[in-house]
Length: 402
Ligand code: GLY
Image (cartoon, rainbow, N blue to C red; front, side, top):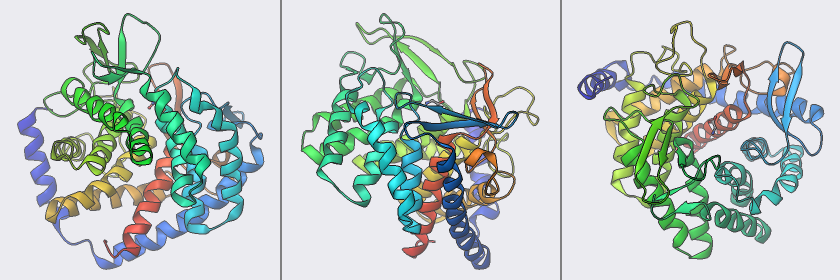
């Protein structure tokens, strides 16, 4: 999609029904629905709890043979289940959810010293970060700061980025997903007063803004740099449909990442970036009417391509935050789009009935399409950002911001 066409479509989006006041009745209904979904999600995770071994983390579930796929603490997904439990506990105050989160965090804790991954933000901030926010403990702070140190050890001054994948030492690989790990670094500076974490985070965000983004504000998945001089060697995809395509979850990571960077720095460049990304997504001619994207905006066989509910949940949560940093029609547009997404996510089209879906909350995610792995399945990260979006919407309501 070219830049001019993008702006035109975005203006149409703002001028369409979305600029009107959301009817009060519909909004009140959605607020009630969100509370129902939080309570139902808490019930559903009790089903998950029964199935899960003490030292394992849920990843996905295969309906065919009722197989719950789990992992140890090392892969990138370990923080999502405890994090989602904490969001659900925050509203329900159900202590069994809290206890289950703390049990899983004990297993996860050792990853604070893991220097072989860039995913420490996902793993440690979604879990320990939320736990610290709800009931601060000195032990959590220590885990978070150690995790930030491990993450910062992967930063290369020449490139101006944190390394994502280690597979080839001669090629410094950075994926757009890495924007999500910066929140942990911002938090570490707040906790310690050591500004080096903050500096690494903004340097990474700036380099990514320069090299990952195309003129239409869609993002490449992977940029490969020369680790010796920081020159870009290649831009490509691994999880998307093509090197030139817009892989949906990658776009979602970018939108969320730059919105979060604006929250942490108040640098207007990050807000501009987030607004442009939102514009790309919301005005996209291939964003379906229910606003849950196909797994790639350029996927073959659209409209018969699978949706990715995880991208939808991340975008929904990010838009709820972005709406609070903008004003007037623009802010209302983001809020209305997020509400449409929440309506979809809360509907039976995406939300599983209690006791079904292997104990996961949402259906219809895509893990890695090109690898033919985890297509049209539940995904733990979809659940996490869904619980976060529910939480954010509930809180906006309690603050009178809806
Ligand atoms: N960070 C891996 C993914 O989004 O699939």
